[in-house]
Image 1: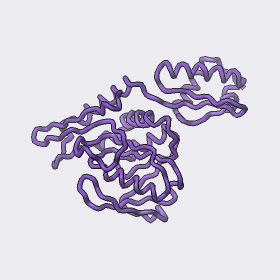
Image 2: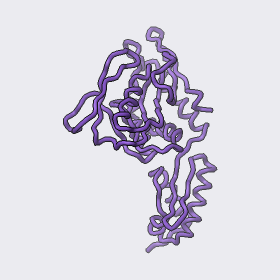
Image 3: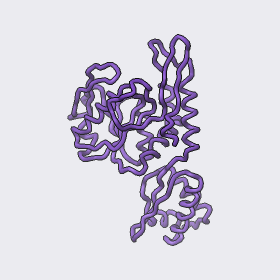
Image 4: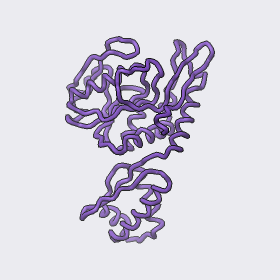
Length: 273
């Protein structure tokens, strides 16, 4: 079986860790893959651990013992967060995105894999130290961000639907009040989508009054699940008091002037401290 040089193993380790973050790889796996002793693999992982830390890519944690291994946890530095958030502000504030009625066209942004990956990097980084079993979202625009966030956290996604579907099997449905329009709406989730007593992270694309996120949180109680965090890409400045108390956002939408063609949006500066 072929032997690999250290620089080859280091390059391969970086690729393997980055493609499957938050996954524990055993030293046995690497030992068989590279045809190298566990002691050699341990030294390789130590080099990667230092490199990842110095480049502010995150951290590599090692697990000792006979069945020891290593896991890569992506954590973003402040500069990278600022760069991504600043780029998002420029994209969302383009005046040709204003739709009749004072809405913003954002489907193309949330369907762009590169942009969504960067958003997911920030969200997953913020919750990297919390045990999460599922990422929860509601259809539709929040799905791409949720899927990419779940990939980086190495957990599955559960999608709450607006309407029941026969293919979902037995479902749990609840009524909730929209925070922006005060209308009564319905959401449902298949019983098979989520195990009871799970710890979940709620992810959504946009928050105005917070009604949808509160509805998702209420839904989690039906599964005896614990909401350990809520993340949204954009929140509106008003109303200042949302229906959910604890959440993080990347951007704050201050105002939309359809007449003047202005979208005033800024970073959530609390995130960048």
